[in-house]
Structure formats: structure tokens, C-alpha cells
Image (cartoon, rainbow, N blue to C red; front, side, top):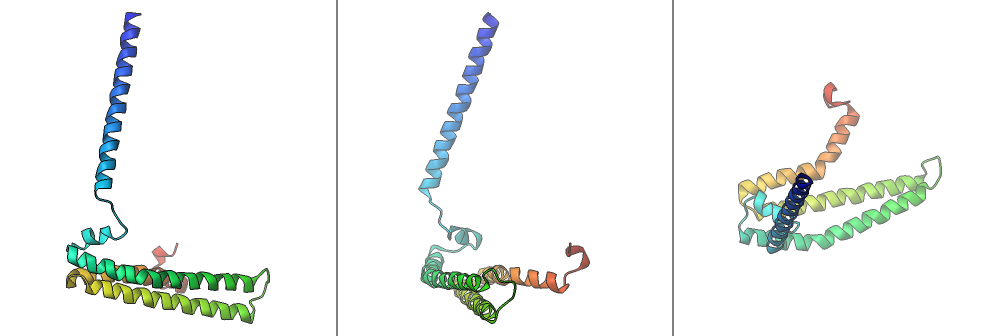
Length: 163
């Protein structure tokens, strides 16, 4: 009986220690996160080693671009709805649906051009070498998905990558 009591007390002590340790680690982590709140652009300063002044300029460019981006996204969403409505439940691609598809493609191209122009402006607010690296990454993100799909559909990728 004495042995069972010792094991029980030991388990309770160990459990309490684990709980207390977890609690204090969670508290400390929360305080550290709240002391330096991250935003959606903070990674840029770390990744591209930007000064506070450069980061302020990037933020200004970003804030100026966001309303244009939101407007373009709304136009694209509306055009997608129009396309879906024109497709309906039909089994044939109508002239109206083709027109809506072309209009949607045009909006997407405008969006890509607008994004690339924004990324070019941001890259100019950075030190030249970092700006070039940033722009190369943003070009990949903006244009890369389409290129990968086009390559896979046209058979341009090597045989090993077509699976």
C-alpha cells in the first residue's frame, strides 16, 4: 500500500510539473508574440534585409496597391459569376460564354500586369541586389503557375516530370 501511495504521489507531482512548465512556456511565448506583432509584410524585412526606411516605403507602396488589388479581384469574381451563369446547365459552349471567357482572361491579364508593375515598384524601393531577387521571386509567383500548366499541357517538360 505504501508503495502504491508513493507511485501515485510521484505521478501527481510529475503531472503537476509538466502542467506548470507547459503553462509558463505558453505564457512566455504569448508575451513574446504580442510584444512584436507580425504583419503580412514583416517577412520582407527579414528575408531581404531591409532598413526601417526601406520597409516604410514598401509598406506605403503596398497600402497604395491594396485598393487596386481588391477592385481587380471584385471584377474577376463578378466576371466569373457571369461566365458561370452563361454556361448554365447547357452542353454546348455558346457565343456568350466564349465572350465571357475572353473577358475573364483579359481581366486576369490586366491583374497580372498590375501585380507585376507593383512588384517592380517595390523592388525599386529595395537595395538593387535584393530588389532583383525579390522581383525574380514575384515573377515566378505571378507567371510561374501558368507556365507550368502550359508546359505540362504542351509536352515541353521532360518525360520524367509528366507523370
